[in-house]
Image 1 (cartoon, rainbow, N blue to C red):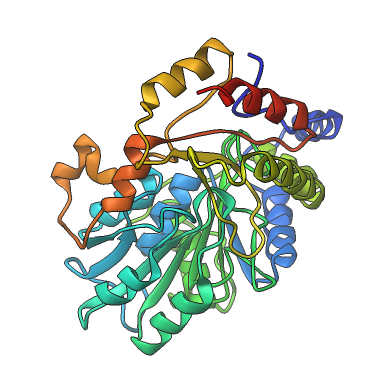
Image 2: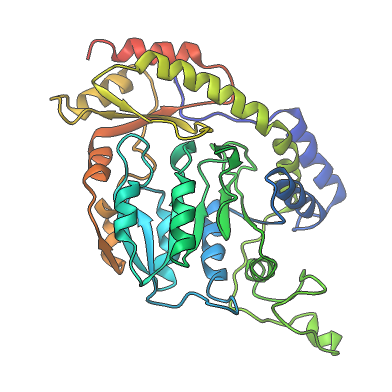
Length: 386
């Protein structure tokens, strides 16, 4: 492949981390995971981090945690606002916990919420806004945070595609009550499979830890606010307090995460330099709409939407990329409303005009944590005569 979608971020340090865990003969979640959680929370300026086995699991237990808060928990049937474009597991846990989804259109240039549409969508019944910073590009959190505060709504941040991005100097993934991340192979740092949740709320933190591990009390803080300890140590060792899951990570994932976190800042700098080159080549090209940066994007990839006012078939463009051995794919997961799974959801839609344009006219190519300006030049040359 001449221009790949993703590449490994591992080096000898990660291999050594795996060997250290193997030599310890302790593979289940333990001290390495705990150390990575503490380092991750500190890096992003938050109090608590909970690691799980994937970003999808992070979304699952983050949603679940909001149903078990003592004050104003979510309830089945509550209305939650979501963008039309995101990865499938942004939406699935909301459906699985019986929430009513209200889909709001995107801005065609940022690929995040159309802010004016979002404001119009909020009603007295809205309990939560799910903010997704698409493919590294921060949402307009100044507007969204004000909206949530004004209407007493929960802000849930799905930051699985945007680790290291900043809005007004503040990291994305730190604005919400709960904030989720992914450390999958193709993401900004990789534990191969893995995810995390950040929160500053001690109650939610302890709920998350219980939900991660079967709903039992092992690993709870001594002063955990979600249950009261009893005197029977025999029973307490296997006491279940919540209907949880088993989405724990392994020590290998934790150990690799520690090594990868050291590299994150450097990875983001290189991705941003690649993005400058991409934007310079394609700015002013009326054939394509490229993503408009909000704040400081961490540039997961490079999105391109064929201008709907021009008579250019996407099929022709994609064939050109295929012939040139340039990997490409639909933007995130496209418009979720156009997928079969939507028949199971309880939902309403304000409108999805721009999401449909991105779905039917859009695609993306990869960005990498190393210099790919030559690959971007090759892309530009490949598309030049279409």
